[in-house]
Length: 533
Ligand SMILES: Nc1ncnc2c1ncn2[C@@H]1O[C@H](COP(=O)(O)OP(=O)(O)OP(=O)(O)O)[C@@H](O)[C@H]1O
Image 1 (cartoon, rainbow, N blue to C red):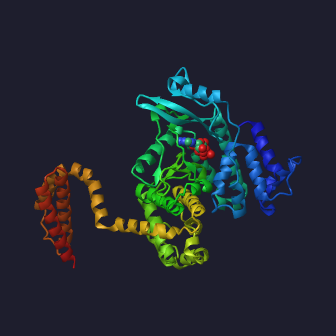
Image 2: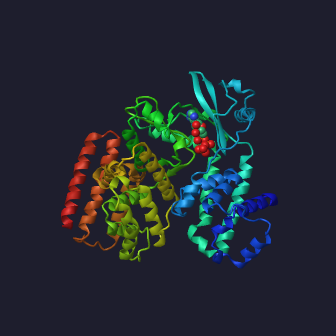
């Protein structure tokens, strides 16, 4: 980090009066001395509100800071609403770089002498230009025919600048925490760390390509979402080639109405796609701002989304999913005691948490939300409030859940823009209840056993030997008769072993053996159950 960049950033922050972000009485003396020693850098925008000044400062500092502001704008859990609203207005529009430079970068990355070797009609004027990458159109010449594509190219030299600014941002965060204890509540170090990871991931277009391929595969059969094809053979870390799409931007409601799009169905499908990604696939597009979502021009009565820019995705484990589903259901039944109890039983908050107090805290923040008609309730805000309360009770909210909560706010915003009466709960409830039911139902148990089959198949050959060793040992010692309390356990073990044998024989297409061992297993299970009664 060069001293001149450091000075430039300090100057910008002070000239926009951003030292006002720290209450005067919280200013440590050392920071006061430092501030006063830079006496020539005075707030030049005193008449403007703080949020507005923050936006202008970030805008003038460039891409890393603009994107940081955009990310913060979605953190309603950390920022007051007026500042978050201002930051949401940050524009990521920057001057494009030269088209022939983009062409040169493509030729270098793909190791070709001329772009014409692979692409026809390469358009030097970019279709779009953002802070990290810009997008050009071309026609890819494949053996099977031609394909309209877009080529996304990372800006030259942006990586160095990003690393330098991120490192400075990290240091600033550490200094703030050290000198202003109060700031710890906003977790600046963690927020910057999280941002750093997201931004560095965005620099790797191969990652984006792999995410797009995975999402595309997950929704290949879907009526609700289409993800354009990625041409991995022509993609590199700084180049991504993908199918060009010609959909209508989702924010262009007039165009959607002009072609008689079923907006109610479209809005409901947004919620459906989100919950499918989260609960079925555990893999969700986490940058669902309207600029990344289009609607297909085909069959508007059965409308389909098109999603681009899969640079940021979220993944969830089983625990996270259970947490979300059970909490949502308990919330919408207004069963705050259940929400609090769930947190304690699952170890999300410490075991010694006072359930009554936790329940009371959740009720205090959530009851006002539920005072509204169901169609106006925001899932995203319910989550923001839940996470904030849970944090106060020492729950560490995982970054993937925060990412999900941000995405949910986008999905809701989008849905209500398309169809203001959208009742999210009615759309989501059957989905969630079904999911929870499936998790505890017999099909799920069988599925889990099926997933464990390879493990048992590996251990199976050792089983006779183990039984033999065990019997031998028992013979050597005085054999104790099996007590009545041990019987159900032994029967249960027998039943499980028979079930495994049944599964393995089924896989080996030995259906008769599979059926016999399955019946024997059920008999043993029933006998075990009777012994416990
Ligand atoms: N497959 C595509 N077909 C048609 N247009 C596309 C395609 N991919 C991207 N674009 C256009 O390029 C723009 C920028 O693309 P993308 O969002 O992937 O880039 P980005 O650099 O991540 O931008 P941002 O940071 O604003 O999200 C899109 O808004 C869209 O207009």
